[in-house]
Image (tube, rainbow, N blue to C red; front, side):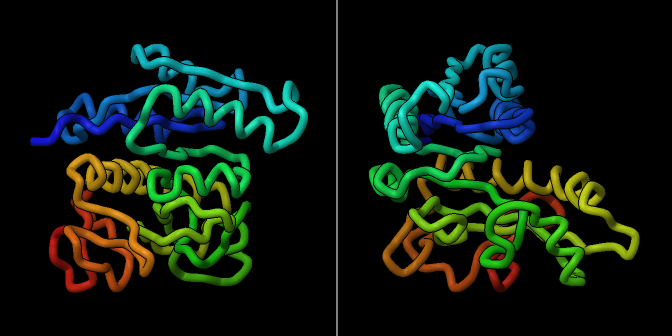
Length: 227
């Protein structure tokens, strides 16, 4: 077995995705080491979760920096200092400057609440309902300079019900997001997934479409085989 993968987590909110990653590690299913948790909000719930778990946690305020680039440079200097092999954006709500993203190309992933490339950006649940879609979901993708446009690694899907609201969709999707993110980080931890100029490679073979989260929490390829 390779050594545990050293990861840094970026978050802006309550930290449920971070909590899911920590729980997967404690359960023995996710061989990672948490190098640190970083946020743009001092009151971010993820920071409290990190500290309770004994993980170093740091918040920087954008207001203390001249502009977005200055903030990103400061935050990612702190991230780089803990030497993560992978950066996981888990509910991190700021757009990152392209010059900073490019520095970590192939080493930073994000979870987004839509079936990308559909519904990049915010208010995805509301937009799905407005469009009348019958399927919704979440995607884990490599972070690129263009918002929510990096190569997609895997997705989780749920049906949209007639009585769904943006709030009920978000609530029902969340546990699938948790399992999806943990499963994708697990692929990195086992050194099985990598970016290429043509998309995502799994065990050295280019994926023709994103992996899909199955009901049992495993990832499946286009043919239904377990990844």
